[in-house]
Amino acid sequence: MNVIPNAAMPAVHTQGLSKIYDNGRGCRNITLTVGKGEAFGFLGPNGAGKSTFVKMLVGLVHPSEGAGSLLGHPIGSLEARRHIGYLPELYRYPEWLTGEEVMKQHAGLLGIRGAEAKIRVREGLDQVGIGRRGSDRVKQYSKGMQQRLGLACALLGQPEILFLDEPSSAMDPVGRRQVRELLLELKKQGTTLFLNSHLMEDVEAVCDRMALMLNGEMIREGSVTEMLKVKVRWRFKVGGFSPVLLDWLREESGLRVSWAEPQSGKADADVGDDWEKPVWLEAELEDENQAGRLNALIVEQGMTLYEAYAQREKLEDWFLQAVAGRDQRGERG
Image (cartoon, rainbow, N blue to C red; front, side):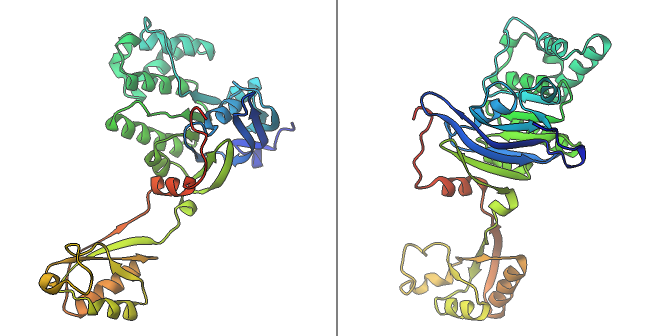
């Protein structure tokens, strides 16, 4: 494979990359480009083939077909490996070693020794929130702490591309937030992030683009913004409302306004005096200007607007919709 000129060099590039195991599992015909400094999210249910694809990129699994490169160097080559850090999903460290000793071993494998190794080990432990607990043995670490240690090891060589396979799956909410903040800081510094995760909020908060894998194939790819580009659902809590005003609101605004929930379980035309109580309305709007227009119309008719807020579609909702109705092979399929 020819090395790509530096000016146009993507961080990750694959063309028809495939790995098919004897049982038919793996991934097929993955063509993908990730730019330098980009944060890319790789999504998919268990058994979709995500980890197999990442293992090919970092050189742990040999492809059945296709080709790929990291910063212009063929995947699996020594030169490609010099530029990457990798946190696998299944991380294991000798429990009798301390966190510092695990880090020192990794430093030695990277050719980092002496005073520089001591500095990087200490900075790395601090960076992931282990700090002074680096002198504790691994067997004293929780699963979340061991995952932090794995992340510190992945960052030890100051990689240009960081591959993370479920980087905070074992952490509590505080730990996940800290890792998310760390990833955002690395992104700001220009590190390319390749994030394989089931935690949708991490992908949504950190990544620029994402892809969805299912049954070994990549079925969708694009920017996070494009993937979630849907009208935003707004909800309005209104007092002094009556059924006859609903048609008027629709006609005046030109928007699809509806009840957000039934009032006491009654039909729209059979609510009687209950309409003196506040009700919830909802509408799918393109921007805040449309929301402002609805607000003004509600007040214009002498109604009381108690509350208005937007409910943006979450990545988890998008994910569930994307795989709905499709057969999934799952972890054992």
